[in-house]
Amino acid sequence: MAILLHTCCGPCLAGSYPLLEPVAGKGNTAVFWENPNIHPFVEYHSRLTSFVKMAGQFGLEVIIGDASYGLERFLHETGSDFGPGRCEICYRMRLTAVAHAAARLSFEAFTTTLLISPYQNHELLISTGEQAAKETGVKFHYTDFRPGFRSSHEIARQNELYRQKYCGCIFSEQERFSNDKKFLNPLLTSDVKNDEKTKAGA
Image 1: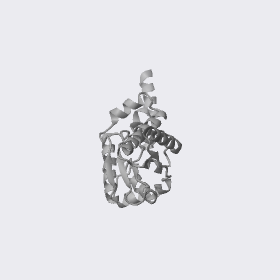
Image 2: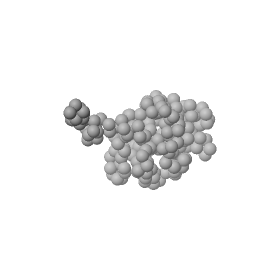
Image 3: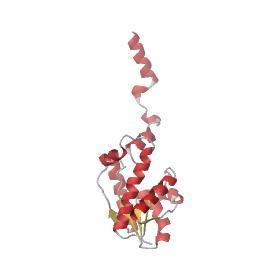
Image 4: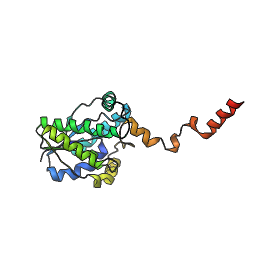
């Protein structure tokens, strides 16, 4: 079965593809890149570079969607929905893009490496993928790639791939680091607040 695999980075490809190849058959998988959700620019470049490197290691054909840095497009699509609802929009942008590419290039099915992450919403990914399948007439193939999550880290180390520390968008980056003590805002600590109150009362 010819499958087009949407890929978000090198490490996720490293853990997902070995689980997909037995299903698709050797030589029947190509990888697809379109990820307007990844910010900031340097992060986008790091993940794209790791993807290209890992695709080369596996000898996979690369299909390119809109490969430009997509901050403005992502923010436009989310509007003012910067809460949990943005994840559904993010999934839809990427899975719709890979589904249309799969239809255009006559693939039998499409799927995504996002299914490797235990932190992603699998039910929402599946329903979004199935909706994109209805729109394009190409099957959404589900494989639970999560068993490859741990091994993806080791493969990434072996291949010196960049390993991201948050989901992708600028809002997930904030959520990932905002409670880390290393990044506490020194202007909002209790000592500074107390000092401000002292000065105000002087």
